[in-house]
Amino acid sequence: MNKKHEEFAERLRAAIEKAGYKAEAAVLEREFNQRYFGRGVTLHGVNKWLKGQSIPRLDKIEVLADWLKIPLDELTFGLEIKQQIQEKQARWDEGIGYQEREIFEAFLALSTPHRKTVREVIQALTKAQALDATRLPNTRD
Image (cartoon, rainbow, N blue to C red; front, side, top):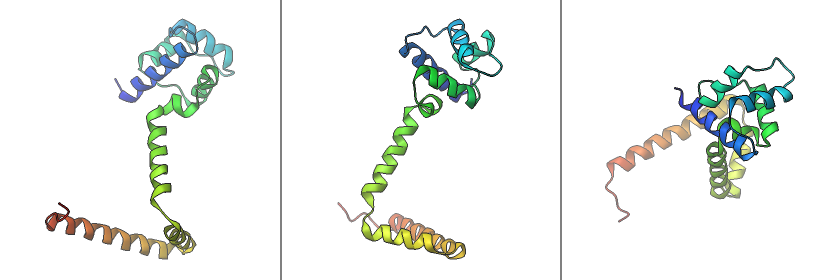
């Protein structure tokens, strides 16, 4: 089975139970079809969602998230992704000061060819620094 499908099934079952329902195909089929305005899903189809054999289309996940009162991104991707994004954002916010922000603003004002040149210079410097780090003995001890 596909790992992403299994993870979605786990999140779906947990959300159903947290909302006070039994995580069973018959319950999911009934509750989903009462809320979905498109072509309803079959018992077999929702059973595949619960067993991790398939993932519903986004319009159906939206209905599920609304019914289960869970954020769409949390049901779709899980909390881990959201936490990773928040951690990266926090590192970004803490890691740069006023001068760096000015440089970023100046970079964004450059033309596309000049941005490309700046990116290439930064990438070359990063590679050179990585090479230097592997060649030099560790003097931080």
